[in-house]
Structures are given as structure tokens and as C-alpha cells.
Image 1 (cartoon, helix red, strand yellow):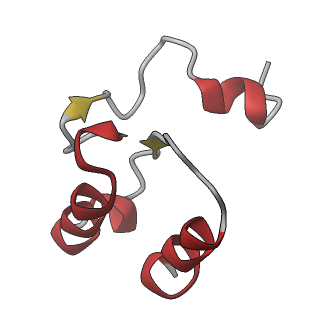
Image 2: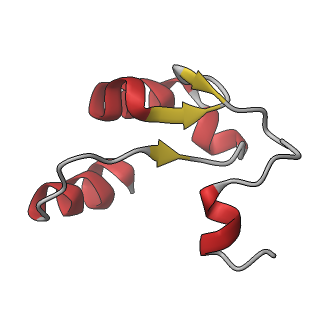
Length: 71
């Protein structure tokens, strides 16, 4: 999904600066997925195993909390 849909869609839009933040679902933290995301986003990856480490169940609010309407 990331390789076939998400990254091509990003390339179709004029995105100058983008951060990618993911939850800690097992499939999202697989080595192949993390390596692909690191190659794509570099140091702008917020993940359990990314360059910007974020705990899987952080008590801090994240931008995704507001976007998904969790509050």
C-alpha cells in the first residue's frame, strides 16, 4: 500500500515539507516498512523505530489525535 499508493500520491502533489507519524501497529513497524519510510522521509519520520522516537502508547497528544477527532 505504501509503495503502490501512498508514495506515488505524495509525488503527485506539491508537498514541500512533510512529516510522517504512524501508530505502533505491528505491520507498520516491520523492518521493511521502517526502512522504506526512512528512505522516503529521512529524519522526518516519527515512529517507534524511526529517527524521532515516539512511544507506542504515549500519553501526550499528537496531531493525529486532533485529526481523527479522538478528543
